[in-house]
Length: 136
Length: 136
DNA sequence: TCTTGACTTGGAATCTGTCCATCGTAGGAT
DNA sequence: ATCCTACGATGGACAGATTCCAAGTCAAGA
Image 1 (cartoon, protein in one colour):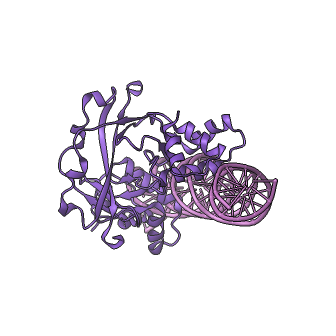
Image 2 (image 1 turned 120 degrees about the vertical axis):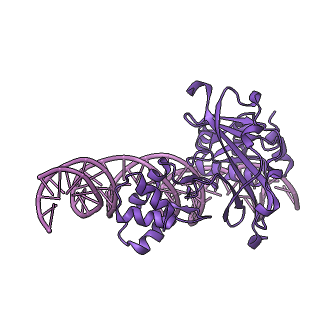
Image 3 (image 1 turned 180 degrees about the vertical axis):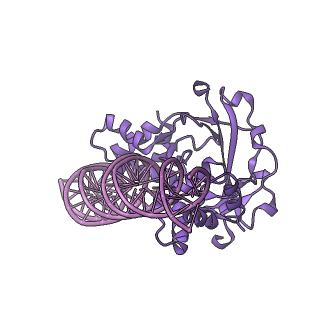
């Protein structure tokens, strides 16, 4: 079953067929779909589902912290359901393929107080870039 | 004078009033304007300058490595003229303000070989997030 | 079963960025 | 100083991603 779906149910979400299908499409590891890709896959199971609903549902999942928004290329945002397993991203500069990766160390600790300009820093995103094996 | 402008001139660029104005608008530290903001400021000095020219000029500056493209929010890209001083970014989660920051350590070294999945990793971007002093 | 407020819909609107045909001009040649 | 021409500028059309909105639908508690 879908872990994501279980967690959403547990938060008292009104469960509709549309939300169920979006959650199911997003389930798994190394999933980094655009909103449009989510819509296309959801529509295979539920042909009438609208784009607006997919955007709404993804936005709510992000607000709830169940899904992470990833903007690796300045084009469409991608949605990563792996929110409960801290990780960073490795992106191929040529084909755009994305992998979840787990660097050692704590990047937050690498930002000294005098480089924080009074901000309450709470989060850090790291994006590694390079060529994947297929793009040599 | 504008350092950026000097470097561009040194590369044999054909200097037009439009390019000069765009380079001047981008000059400085902690500058992270969107293309539209650049256009607005440029238009104060040169009212007829077109959006297309601003996009073209910014794109060329990025290709030449004189300006860096920053995508911190999935909305409009921002342009950072501080390309010759390696740095990362600190972004306010509420108002979007951006500061250049200089973390210690080398994030590239923190990605072990077995987490590289055969990629030739060449680059890493770090984005810190939190609340700025004004947004408490 | 009824009720109601939350959810869905699809199309219009917005925002960001690219493309293209045409016009203008910087800067080397004369 | 003037002429040429290739490179740059223009603006309007176009495209992709996302948001907005008014109207219709439905999940779930009473």
